[in-house]
Image (tube, rainbow, N blue to C red; front, side, top):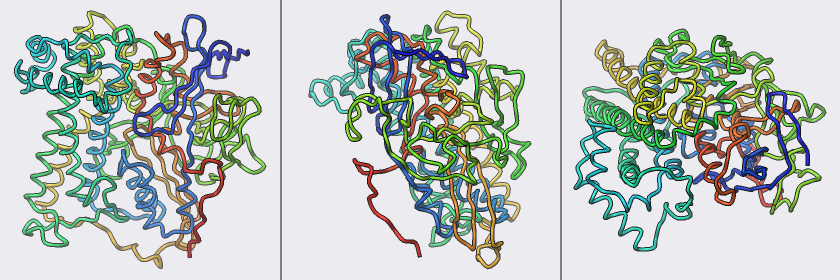
Length: 605
């Protein structure tokens, strides 16, 4: 038994019952969480662990920097494309390559499509069942569900009693078959579920609608990038030519018909976010109006690099601001410089890596080391291949611990919307104020923006608002692209520095991206035309970080503190809060064998 107060203000008590949740995520299953609960089932200590090793930084060493995007894009199959975008931007930064305006606008639409697609899939198919009970939907009155739908979102056309009755019949046949599929293993009898049967029926109906819509959204990637997942990118621009008089012959995939197709998909994203996604999140949240906790670091210290410049290469025109807020002081926003070695640093004191001779030192990513060292602490229960209880006093995760000037911070849509609200960005403030007002109307409360945002529910709402905003911004991107083409500019790539003979002997670059899960950064060092060092500091590394040498806990762990559980053996409360981050451990973890041995070695010539 021990009690300790961390420098960032959390009191950790390791007495009480230990509860293990493994895996935590629905498809990215390499995350483990352990908590200690007291006699009142209140969480008093939390430990999050990434349980696999990735090692792509090692794989790309010695490779041609123009190829690296294709390797690092495979970090994840969900947030496909954002790592490729960060990679080509980092290499272009190192080699001082400027891309054409058309390429910039196409990349913007690809990135924002990913944002909308990823957020929709996450909410409906990875997170909603933490709040929505599909079995309870069988008790709903379809007519009352229709009334609820028209109250929540009067512009959504699919709202008739007959429509909901048909969906309910399909759910009943599904349940009666005994093959519950994605609805299997839920804690459906847990009193933590609060929705009315009508709200449950509406939620499950939109779960099914979203399955169809997300398939349509990513067709934007197939038009511009050739395929999805893992669309093609190119150092110097984009790999698709523009020929407005063309007939889709090889080498000329973009003509007016294809661009009109893209505009139709953008319109679908706008309509779905406005009429379904955002109203659903607010309606569901109103049934959980007492969930005013789970904010953790998101209620105190947040960070993002900023993104979506309206004017290419002019960060002052960023439509999503960057910065850092510390200790809940929204009146002071610090600037972020990813090039400054004193700002972004990664620590491995409690991670299964080693920094030879400097174990407790933070390293800037340009000087980062990816050297695995898998060893369990002396108080671990179990074995390397069957851990029963982790020892958080030692190394306990394959995730490193990034810090901004030594501070643990949360990243993600909640952080971006907190920064935008604090910096008084009008579009985001209007979205937040509108969302909070609708929440208060449905819930019968009178809460302000801080009270709603700094919670598990607020983290989920910020993600929905960001999807809505990205869809809206794409309308402008599409119009700007058409105007630029009409002005006679059809360039999509700058090949002036494609030949390595034009490169300096040594160069280094950095690029940042607003990835769906938060602030993403790639740092590259190039020497003699090859990758000398490469480091990716990804959003889930920030949020899922273990403790640092000073003892600060990360965002996952902080968010669970003092959460009351109905039934510790059915940890739906833990899932709700951790899923609200959209944790994607594939980004932050690595691959290894069961016993930690090296699987293969590849020599790069």
